[in-house]
Image 1 (cartoon, rainbow, N blue to C red):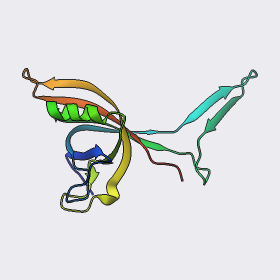
Image 2: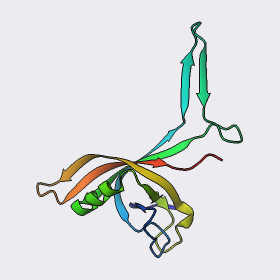
Image 3: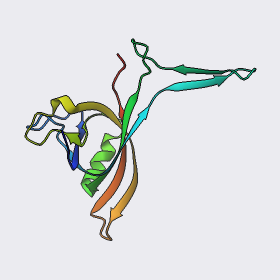
Image 4: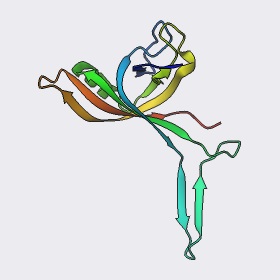
Length: 141
């Protein structure tokens, strides 16, 4: 595996390229994984703390690996991202095998939940740096 300057991200209903990766490539400017768990904290009237966590069948706390990427896009790519909001997508992170290799093992199911920080690059606004949030759809075992 190598750090590549792009991610593969497209709707799950769209096919794959010759490397078996989601069709659309997005140039990555920045990448930030966000590891989270789902927990609820309660305190009793006497001050005792109770924490409820989601656990898998092995009683391990379920961790979700979500992503925040800053990608460089054209106007038409930004419009396409907007159509992907809330939809199930397939992602290949920018740490994956080289082009020309099978990407199947690196595909993750995600949902595009947010597009923010739309920053035009230059006065003509032909390109933008955009932050996208992707939520992992992996189900606990």
